[in-house]
Every structure is written in structure tokens, then in C-alpha cells.
Amino acid sequence: MNSNFHAKALPCIRRASARWLMVGMAATATAFMAPHSLAADRDVSGVKVSLSLNLAGKSLELNGAGTRYRGPFKVYTAALYTTQKFSSVPDFHADNGSKRLVLTMLREVDSAEMGRMFINGVQKNIAKNDLTKVLLELPRMGEIFAANKRLFPGEQLVIDWIPAVGMQISVRGKPQGEAFNSPEFFEALMNIWLGKAPADSQLKDALLGKAEPERLSRS
Image (cartoon, rainbow, N blue to C red; front, side, top):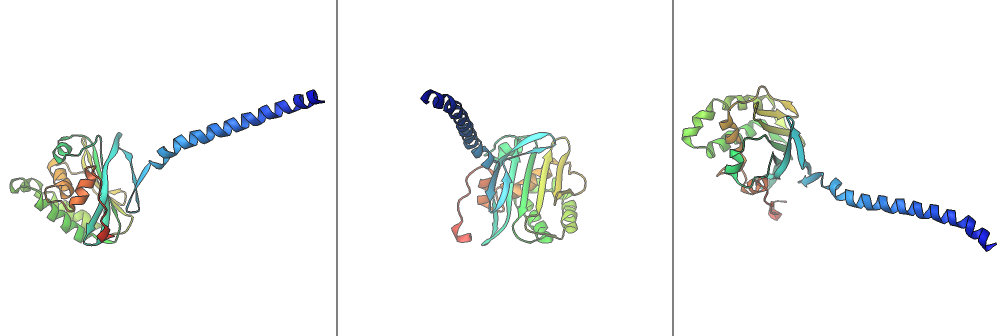
């Protein structure tokens, strides 16, 4: 009787062991995969920021991201993508690779006001001798903001630099006219956030890959 019992029970035990082994292996694989899945995005002020993206066939990695404040208010998040990591502004400008800056609105923004902020930011961060090189491009920037009266929470303004094309600006996912061909103008725009007189010094550090400190008084 015992031999019959063992003969019948043994295959069941083996099948159960195999099932538990497969469950264990699946759980282990999930445990190893989970961190990678969680790392697919980064949360910045409630906005999901991708750690990588593709721009015109080139793979770009997140260089840094942070939040733009104006007084106590959060205005937008900014995420900077590059082909390699940069912590130095001169190195960033010297690189000829593709780049992208993504601004995601956190509150309703009047486009005319943002346009004025852009122009002021350019003027504060450019030498007078270089200003003439970008003056011709500023009216087109004004047209872009005039065509998009307001930006609402969640909407994006994207500035791309593609070496073979130039600088392409998109609003709500739609390209705004032809690309700007001037690398000096792209550098001037980037200096709004990365220049010697940036719009937000803590955001500048964040875009350069430095940890953005908590602004407890502004939360």
C-alpha cells in the first residue's frame, strides 16, 4: 500500500515543485525588472519626464530637469536632453550634437508675457556685439507667441536643435514654421536658462544635472 501511495504521490509532488519553481523564477525576474520599469520616467512637480527620447534618429538622454518658479508660483517644468551629459555651460554650447529643451506648463501662461520674458532673457545674457546677430530672429519668435495666445497646464513648448536642420520650435506638438538656421540664436535662447543671468539659478543647476534643492518656502 505504501509503495502504491508513493508511486501515485511522487508525480504530483514533482509537478507541484515544478510549478513553484516557475512561480519563483517569475517573481525573481519581476523583482529585477521592476526598477528598470520604474526608472522609465522621472517625476518633476507632478510632470512625468522621460529619461531618454529619440530626436531625428538620434538617441538623447536627460541631462537634467527642474521647475521654474516666479515668486511663490510654479510656472513650468524644464527638461534638457543631450547626446551626452554636460555639467558645464561652455561644454554644452561647444557640442554640435542634437539637443532638446521641453517646457511643460504648470499654470496658465499668457504667451505675450512669455515672449517678453524670452526677449529679456536673451538681452540679459548676450554681449552687445553679439546682439546684432540674433536681432533679425526675434520678430519670428514674436510671431510664434502671437499665434499661440495662451499656454495651459500640461501643454508644452519644445525647442529642438538638429545639426542638419537648425532650431525647430514646437507648441502643443506642432512645429511653428520653418527652422531657425542660426546657431547663435539657439545659443542665445538656451542662455535664458543657462546663461550668467538665468531666469532661475536653481533651475539652471537642475538642468546641468545638479540636484534641485527643495524650496520649502515656495511649495
